[in-house]
Image 1 (cartoon, one colour):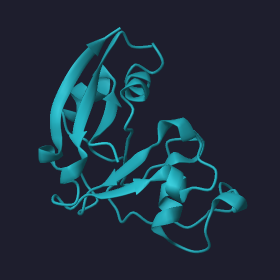
Image 2 (cartoon, rainbow, N blue to C red):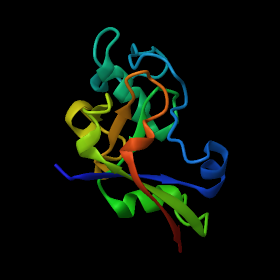
Image 3 (tube, rainbow, N blue to C red):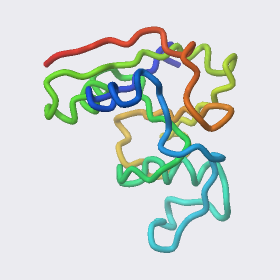
Length: 148
């Protein structure tokens, strides 16, 4: 298991969130499949954390969950931070994965949970704080500004 995870952030989001890794919503990390969104070969019956993982990454549609997307691959984080080259500079948050358990942060490895991940090459790891809010700042060991 890689020691570090990366979160790519565009400059607007970096400024707006003032360096805090905050999920889109702060609520328990569970979901139920929805009739109009769920692919039944890619969902589980009833309310579960697994369905929250599926919803979080589904079609990269940005469905709101209390999870924060990360990847163990720096080039993928750079791609997301720059929105594929839309931004000439961006920020990469480097996360010490070994501190997740110590700081009460749960890890959900998408490729291990989702039968058909939207972007399998991301090897996405969704991080969820114990209070379903912002990830603890102690998890972030560096914020690196990048320019392309």
